[in-house]
Image (cartoon, rainbow, N blue to C red; front, side):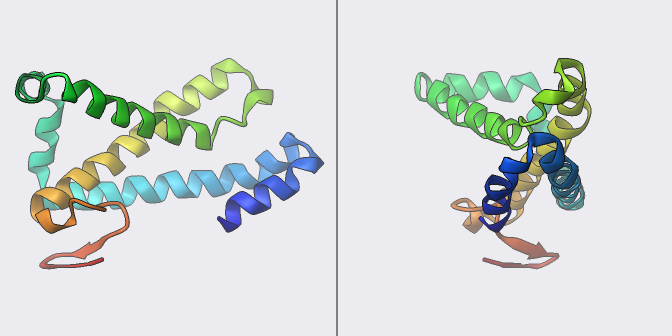
Length: 141
């Protein structure tokens, strides 16, 4: 909340100046998400099975039309992450595209896989795997 409030208060100085400060903050945020994600994936590597299309097809066969709504929630999560860095419009489309495909998306994927790995290891965290901190053998909510 504090970061967002600072960004909105600083917008009057122009997006270039905001970007100079906010860009490194967002980079640190995404790198942190990726590092924590990779750490948790090592603890539960079976989460990487999510890349197998068989499991996606099976999910839709088991959940029918509800699966489409669940997929919609996933798409909303990804677009929410995209919105975090979307104020880079003064850089143009190619840099934004490269930032998304080669930096933001991989970091977010590692974070989402982290949440899956946490839930596989600690099913009780299914309600909020993002903000739970786990160490080998125990979790803190």
